Picture 1 (cartoon, one colour):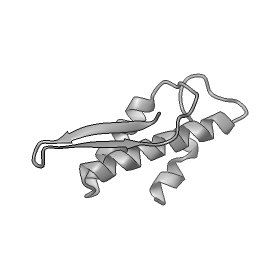
Picture 2 (cartoon, one colour):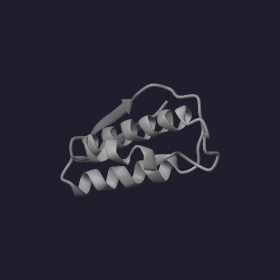
Picture 3 (cartoon, rainbow, N blue to C red):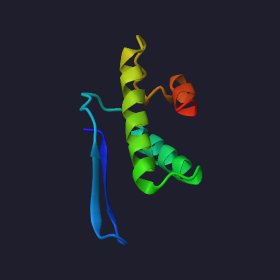
Picture 4 (cartoon, rainbow, N blue to C red):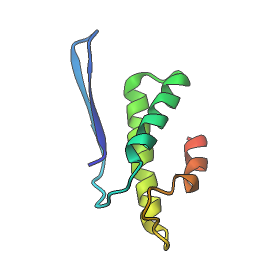
Length: 88
């Protein structure tokens, strides 16, 4: 499952976001998630929205990589999905 959990110390509330399960494993998905999360926060999103955007983009990139006939073994094909992230 691609998702995220967090805890808001100000409101004392837990946050969970999950999306579909993708049966694949690639190197670099944590780096991808972290980069999109931080980038979203720098663009003014709150941490919950940034986490959702990062989780969805990571899942989307895994799906696109799985559709690539060359299926890179070294990591996700994020270059193919950067336009999707920019336009979101």
